[in-house]
Amino acid sequence: MEIILILFIVSAVVNCVLLYYTISAARRMIIASSNMEALQDIFSSFEGHLNVIHESEMFYGDSTLQALIEHSGLVLDEIKKYKELDTFVFYEEEEDLEDEEKTTEN
Image (cartoon, rainbow, N blue to C red; front, side, top):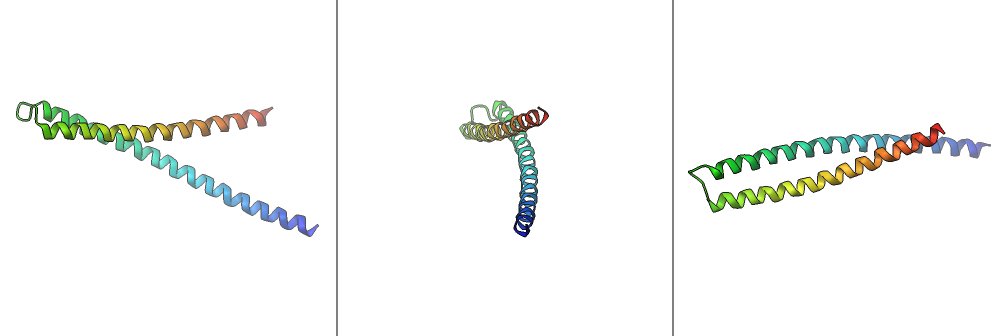
């Protein structure tokens, strides 16, 4: 009987630790996601500003600015890839939670 009680207490403690870790990991993912969105907005604005400067009469056709525009486009593409991966992970987690809720209701 004592062994079962000890195992129950150990199981409860492990479950509490895992629950705490899961909640803190989810919070960090949400923060990282919002930071990724802000970063994408900043780089999009930067790319638009570069395009405006490049198209002005003073810098029209400048190869250095053109290379900078292309590089900012590549950076934006990489940010979008990570954002899509992040969104995919969140959608999978939401679907798993919905499935668990449906099974508990039945």
